[in-house]
Length: 168
Image (cartoon, rainbow, N blue to C red; front, side, top):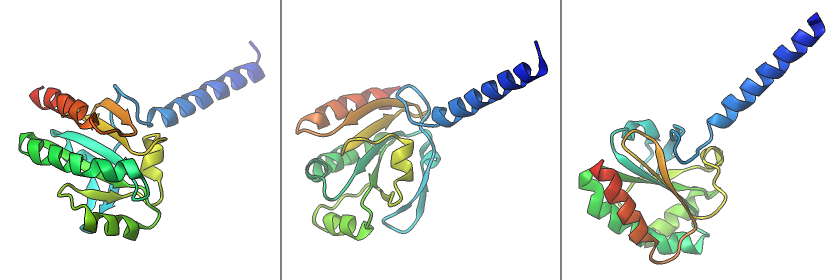
């Protein structure tokens, strides 16, 4: 094998490895949830890995999304019911202006942490393509369930999945 051919093969292998490494960081059911840090409504930085050991629901939403607004009270009920069992919801808002989200939350109060992804970096990491998008993570930080969109009644599916995960 000549030297130029070996260099070409090496370059192709390295390129492939770099591409695999960059795409393996994206969220996929069955894989580890990519870590992130976002500013919360309270002004604190929240890091996903701080919730390792808990069952975590990450709910991507926006104030302009009708189904998101409809889903919020159902999420609050789930949070209230299961939080003492090691369950947390992280509501990740995707509005470019967080003031719109805050105005909506003044009308629909929730007690779980609300985070702001104004730059959309976390939503890109999680390949969010529908609103709302909801992930459920087990206590080890594995992505176990993915739900795109919302219709009334989905909260029953969520509850069943949450019960399964908190029992593990």
